[in-house]
Image 1 (cartoon, rainbow, N blue to C red):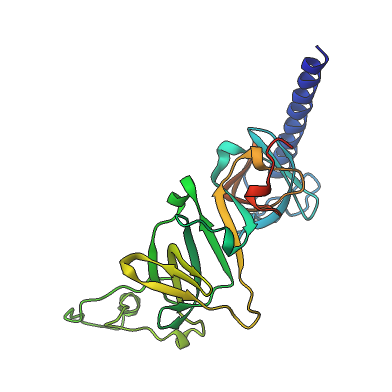
Image 2: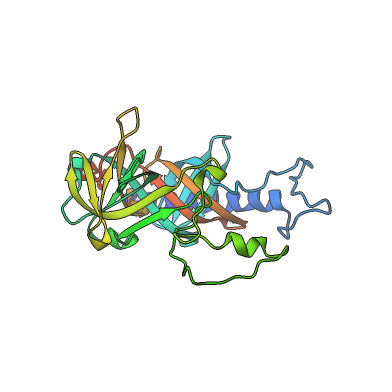
Length: 271
């Protein structure tokens, strides 16, 4: 009986906390959630409320239930996030290249050194059911984050003064783009199985094998990426979020990534 009453009290505390958080968000945004006449959100004291960070933000998990995560940013602000309001929920577990299984898929992206060599600072691997989060890939990525594709050299385009945008869309081996024009080198994106771990070599599609070359520090971090679940979240976990919208219920995010401090094989879900 005491355990039942304890669980009921805990649920009531969580409902009270969530109601308070929702009320606070409504107070910040206003009853209709719209901006004021100047196009700026303000709180009850008239202070300007900053917009959601477009490039994402870091925070810390302070509470987790099967349906909710409570995140606190480094300004001390706390936000409830419903699991159903997370479009993509992932977890990164630190590990080493020796933990990569023979059937796992490895993803690396970094400066393209030529001759099928890539220089990443970090490697992710996906095992088991999480393999379908990625697909075997071997692509050169231009400085504007576009993938190099082949263009028919017989294609004829009549250029004029208003066609610069269209001209810039033509790229590939027939119309190469110089990386030096933007000051950012082209990158190589490879996803495949581990062919060797010293040096690290990734076998991509089409029997192409890419060699991973470390930088001057001779250090490449490795994480195992899995789908997320609140059962793996613990108080103190660091999370990176891409917020989309603030609603009376809480934050809506396009992506939430938990960063754990131990490998998945050492994690005890019952603690």
